[in-house]
Length: 215
Ligand SMILES: N[C@@H](CCC(=O)N[C@@H](CS)C(=O)NCC(=O)O)C(=O)O
Image (cartoon, rainbow, N blue to C red; front, top):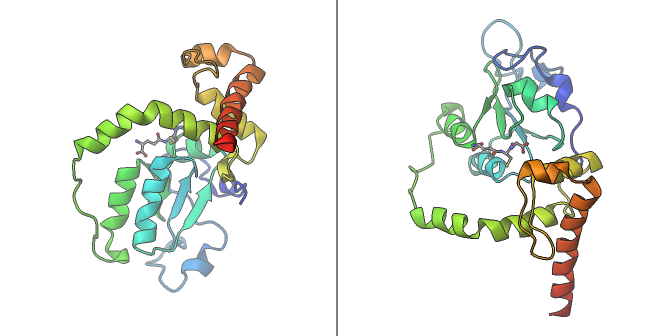
């Protein structure tokens, strides 16, 4: 799968709170149920995501659970323009419903979709408030981050197809060194040569591969 380059072409001309005109083809998608006079409305929600983003996976789940047809738009990770045009900053996930301002925040997106009677009655229960899960994540995130981030660059992830996107990802995510060096803060990390940052990622990746080959 590749990062979709069509996304910018359907963005609003101005910024965040504007309601964009219907994209070309919207009439064909939603003609039978388009409501009221005025510009044609498209029916399928647009969901802008990164495949690497756990908050995006969370937002995607409600569409799967309720079997809601939607347009899933993978942004390239270095594409600042698309999310900024939609919500004023670089962040995913973003939901855009026809006739409404695009909205961020996975939990708000989930609630917006689950509560909308067009897609049936709500199905989600209230949050369990499980503190043990939060603690597990807090405790293990440093190791999870190292394992996940260094592997993501080698996975089939549409947001990281372009070299520029992978470089952007590395720039944004400092890791500890391959010989146990402390994880630098982001300013220090970004002041280094790109080749050094890439090499830390690569060395971790290869070390684990070597370890799993020999086990
Ligand atoms: N509170 C937000 C958090 C979303 C978030 O942090 N998304 C990350 C990706 S996992 C993001 O877009 N960060 C900006 C970036 O990666 O440049 C939510 O629940 O949707």
